[in-house]
Length: 165
Image (cartoon, rainbow, N blue to C red; front, side):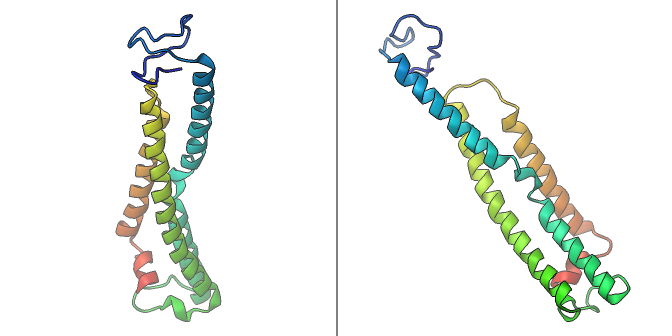
């Protein structure tokens, strides 16, 4: 429980007055606010848990399309020579699924980044102690997204070039 005026930690106090600012408080009301705060925190945490893996879905879809193209062609697809749209419906379906995966991953990352900011704001609003959840989720997310982009940039088979060519 925290004082509404100065955010002083009121847990364990026998008086109904904040020792920091002198404001009176109702322990039952503050306890209900703490329950609501905890529920909001848990909801935001659930939204953020899968954020680190959002960068993997588009890469997986990209390589699934490429491998399907290789199975259809009988050899690895080559950028500028083998058009994915001309390889039949399995490759075309996966090609559009890959495009949707990239759009969906970007949209999901934006939503989850907002949830992560809200989680951090809620956490700091209540003057809570340091939480590793506020570090590992964005840290792992950044690592996975950088790794995914690095795969696209430094892929020796130029898989992304083949798909968008």
